[in-house]
Length: 384
Image (cartoon, rainbow, N blue to C red; front, side, top):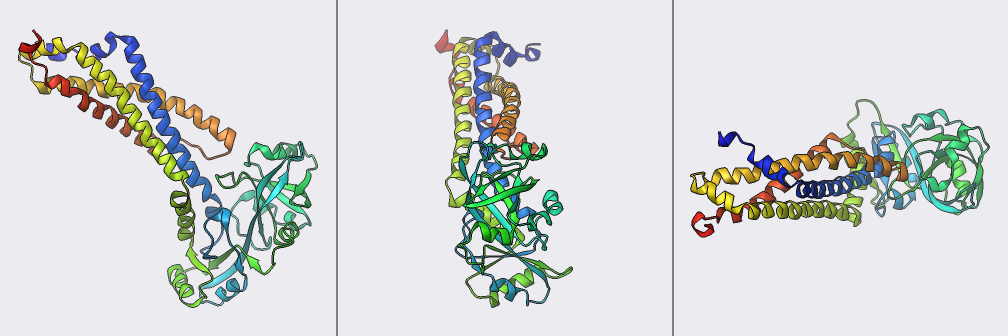
């Protein structure tokens, strides 16, 4: 009959204030892990959104380029040389650079990423951009990314209301004639898209014969890996040839290893895990210490160390499950708040929820394993 008594649950609920403190501590540790993992995933996801939207199979970049926000240009003739390879269907040039955007409302300036390409070459798989290719052919016209940060002004709202939007980018007067959605990232707070001709007007000092990314489409059925290998062997070494996945990995690797941001988020997750271990250990250790005479009595009655240890581990598992629920609920709210404030893709995923759940269980069971050392030393003869 005694084995049917929920001893672990009764001990945890005996002092409700202590239980609430324990659950709050576990929830805090979970929130910390959720936020760090969420920011890390948002960092990687936002950095490659443009890469994934580009219509292309092979990409040419300068060997000196480190990331999309730090591209070094190279001679456009390399792209034309690549067009001569068998299996290549078409080539396109992509221009990228930062300029100061002047907020039409308060006249404050902020750096924005300017994306330029030939509108006759459909290279971006974004519906709003496809619908406005003819629009950006007009002089000094741009499309504005409505998912840019709020500091650029209420451009999307004003455009929806039919207002005329004119401002300055760099030293050039431009008009916003369309809206699209790409999203801000850790490297760029906002984006605008325009034609290659308008791009040259915004950056008149740039050599028109230099490009930032060369985009190559291959013919249907062509072997992309083989074409990439041929280009690497035959093109001069002043360009780097990448497949689309390698282009994505190139960007991801920069944020993972080329900056401290990825490490900081990983460290934050580890710190949340350690904080949770300390909190749960303190709760379980105090519980064991407070009930040491009772545990010793059970030992004297014939209950084994294994049974008593299972009670502590049951307490740890109960704390893990109960503490996780408010942690994930509050994290949903924080994700939504962060997404609205920063335009970063902060989304709760099943894999992340499962990962944190597993970490929480390991965290609590690990704390229980440390706390039971005192229980193993409980001797009825010493206590009584």
